[in-house]
Every structure is written in structure tokens, then in C-alpha cells.
Length: 309
Ligand SMILES: Nc1ncnc2c1ncn2[C@@H]1O[C@H](COP(=O)(O)OP(=O)(O)O)[C@@H](O)[C@H]1O
Ligand SMILES: [Mg+2]
Picture 1 (cartoon, rainbow, N blue to C red):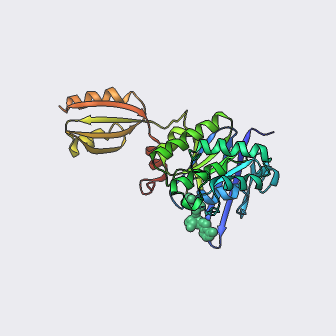
Picture 2: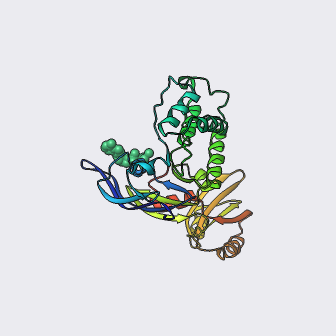
Picture 3: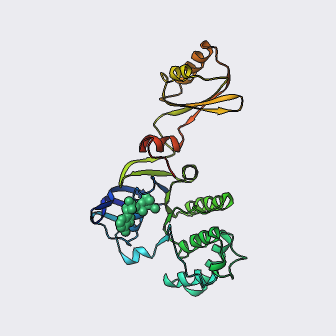
């Protein structure tokens, strides 16, 4: 059995003359949480649908759970939360989960336990006997998540799982993903919410105009550091001066002070910057340095023209 949950090479999808996915080449290891990041229209949903066997690729190869695309037994081990879904809204939450569990052939006894367990995990035990048409958007998103896990999948695809959720709902999804990872489930997550991805994902791929432009592990994230300063004042001359120590110098008002951030190659730049600022007679309120934020990386990879939505 291969160690890879997903392995693709040159997957491509054309709709007429429109290229939705140009070149999807990536690997996802088993039991990792993998973030698939890119701006709207980059081809994330189409990529996911190809991996699920819902959209037939125009070209390229892929294996999911060691099997070629569209393999039916492999599909039984896969879960899916679609981005836009229309559920059977005349069913209650419990009926809906039972229906989807039966489609997967989950035995009746296991299914009853599984339904209660999942309703608990998505905080819908009390609403389980209400019809889906009475659910709020956030509740639908959460019952959708329970649905994606009804067959106890080895690999689950979540397309924008936190869209439509309030901060508490997002926290719930984050906890759920962490639990899935602990249990050894592979999670493939499409998202444009970078701060969320940053805390839950082991590895990420950046997709731009239908091609994977970078894949990286977040643990061993390389590519420089971010310096964050709070200064008494910053004028154009000072910002220009800072630019010699690094790139992407930004300033924002921050109370009585001014917040300034810049990207540098390594931490040895920090004392140099401090010395220089003191030499300029600038008041320094704080000075810190951290791993480059995922947002900074995203902007770097995508180019400043494509900020996430
Ligand atoms: N069924 C389709 N027919 C024609 N174009 C499509 C279809 N599905 C997606 N596209 C186009 O392919 C591109 C990628 O779409 P999508 O995969 O939904 O991107 P994302 O999920 O990253 O926002 C978009 O330009 C979209 O308009
Ligand atoms: Mg999408």
C-alpha cells in the first residue's frame, strides 16, 4: 500500500476553450491535513471534483488512496463536503445523516451510534429532529460536515468548510479537523481563510490560474522571517531606509505609534535594524520577529494583485 493518499500528475480540465485547471501536480501523504490555497477562480473546486471522480479530467493521471480516479471501492473510503450544496431539506438532521450513511452501506447498528456521535461533534444533538429547512446557514454547514464523515472516511475533502460560520463555528471545525488528524484521517482542505489554514494544516499547496505553483510544509516553513515594529513615527524617508534591510515594507497607524512590517532573510537583520533606527533617533515601542505569516507568503506567491477574498 502506498503511503500517499493522493498523487497527481498534470491533471487538467478544460471546459470548451476555458481552462479551469491547467496542471495539477501534487502529493498528499496519509494522515496529514493538506491545505489547497488560492484566490477565487484558481481551480480549487474543479481540482477537488476531479479527485473525487465527479469531473472527468481532460488530461493527466491521479491515484487516490492508491487507486485510479473513479474507482468505486476507493470512493467508499472518501468523504466530501461540497462548497455549494443543496441538501434534502425535507429531512430532519438525523434522517439526513441516516440517508447518506445508507448510501455508503454503513450497517444499521453502527450507523445509529455514528449519527449521535457526529451530531455531538458538530453541536447539533438538540437540533437533530428538526428539518433541515429550519436550519440556519451555519447549522447546514455543520450538518454537511457530519455528512462528509458519516462513512468514517480515510480521506475527507472539505471545500471551504468554514464559509458561513461564525467564530464559534470556525473553532468547532478547527477542533474537528485536529481530531480527524489524531485519528489518522487525511484531510484535503480548500480554503481562502489563511489564518485558519495556518493553525490546522501540515502542508499546503498554492494554486494560481489552474496550476500548483508551490507546495510546502508549514512546520519547516522556509522563505524568510517577518519583522514587526512599533515606532514613534515613520515618514517616507524612514520607510525607504528600512527597505535596505528587507522587502515589502508596510506601515499602518497603531494608536499613538506606527506599526511597520517587513520581510527579511534571517534574524541577524534584527539587531542591524535596531541599531539603525536608534541612529535615526526614532522611538522604538516594540520590535519583534516571527515566521512569515501565511498571508505574507500567499501574497508573495500570488503577487500583490490577488489578495484572498
Ligand atoms: N462547469 C464549468 N464550466 C465552465 N467553466 C467552469 C466550470 N466550472 C468551473 N469553471 C471555471 O473554471 C475556473 C475555476 O473554477 P473553480 O474550480 O470553481 O475555482 P475555485 O474553486 O478556485 O474558485 C473558473 O474560472 C470557473 O469559472
Ligand atoms: Mg471553489
